[in-house]
Length: 119
Ligand SMILES: [Zn+2]
Figure 1 (cartoon, rainbow, N blue to C red):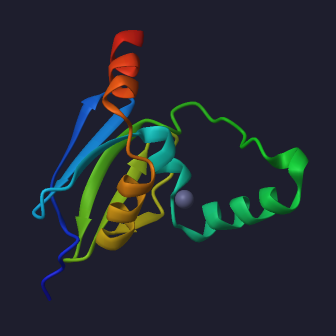
Figure 2: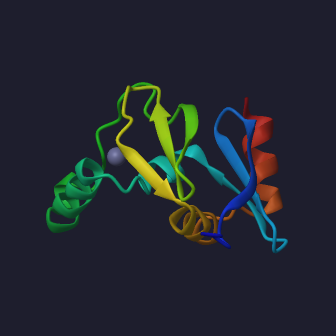
């Protein structure tokens, strides 16, 4: 099945950024932090729901390497599996979800510039 939301290319222009491009001309760059935040696995969804109910848990515990994307592996013809620096690898990102995430969190050119100049 042809998926119109399949990204044409995905790249990491910077250790904390990820870029994607689609055949319809849309392209966007977001932070890996946001990409991790949007992890759709049951574990992360559960954590998100809990924190929404309890304002004191709003801040997720930071684990070293959790925002380092180790690999992005194709799953069938519909998704990518992300493996993170903290060993988390249960997140499957469907093409639709990836497109949605990149639309929602798209950085402005000046924001990208700022991140690139930081390190
Ligand atoms: Zn997850």
